[in-house]
Image (cartoon, rainbow, N blue to C red; front, side, top):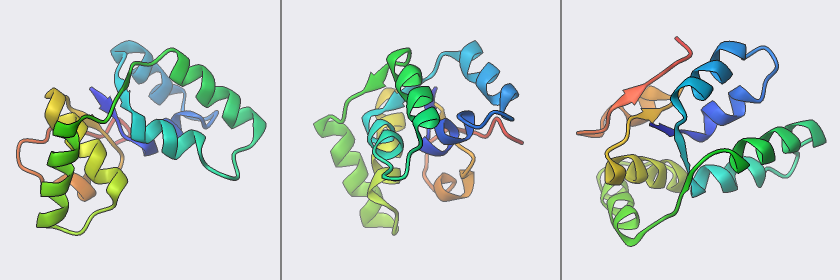
Length: 120
């Protein structure tokens, strides 16, 4: 499993106990893109920063490879999508992982990309 950035952000919310348990039970990976998107947010408060730093210290972070970049290029040639979403989808496809996201509509059009929304 590969976590989308939005799932990581939701997991930082104190009320998301079930989501944090889902992540703990499944030990998913995260993309380097999610690391940059979440920890790089310019209005990150100290508590969220600490949560994210601890989260990423305990999570496998998958690098962006040439294969992932090529998949992202192909996805963006087919349909308008953010660079981050294209790289995250490319990572899930390259590693054969299910993408864990709350924004399934953003990715549903991508063939062979398995999606799961643990928040529904």
